[in-house]
Amino acid sequence: MGRIFEKRKATMFKRYAKMAKAFTRLGKEIAMAVKAGGPNPDTNPRLRAVMQNAKAVNMPKVNIDGAIKRASDKDSANYEEVIYEGKAPHGIPLLIECSTDNPTRTVASVRMHLNRSEGQLGTSGSVSFLFERKIMFRVDATGLDKDNTELDLIDYGAEELNWDEENNELIVQTAFTDFGKMQAGLEEKKYTLKESSKVFIPTTTQEITPEKEADVMALIEKLEDDDDVVAVYHNIA
Image 1 (tube, rainbow, N blue to C red):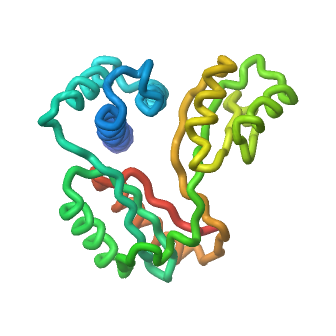
Image 2 (tube, rainbow, N blue to C red; image 1 turned 60 degrees about the horizontal axis):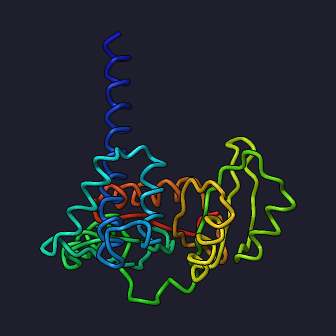
């Protein structure tokens, strides 16, 4: 009985830690959106998108409103997006997306994790050419006609459309530069947007052994535990 309780407690701790990490990341994204376009979501599409993402992970309204209020203070921290490039063990390329108010601290932490796992930090452009930046939208598929919907969204820049019947969602991929166009189109057509996110898609993938993959994933897990790290991308198949 004691072992079961400890296992459940550990699972709950991991879940709460993951939720706290998501809330911290979204708080930074709200801050950057407010600094860039102001605190009014009606006139700030970037802020509207982040607020929608926050609701999708059940971030409390009081947390969202608090993040907007703090970001509106002229003395609040200024966060910036930084992308670090490097290699994991076995030469696997990594893109490490961060949001930080102290790049010196962040790059030192990223370098430490890489070095300790037999990886290495690269220079700008050393692996980024292996990835393409895209935007992914998750749309509620309830009541949508597939043919009409696909015609609508292709006009707004959709590159790929995937119907996820299990989760009743439509996954829409666009070029990074078409984010605003697609967001405006979804709003105009009254689609229910669940979430939008920036992602890096590898142009090619590679197969590696399970043992090597375990080494890479162990490093990625350590990086993702860092408060400044938003996401880590690789090209393992």
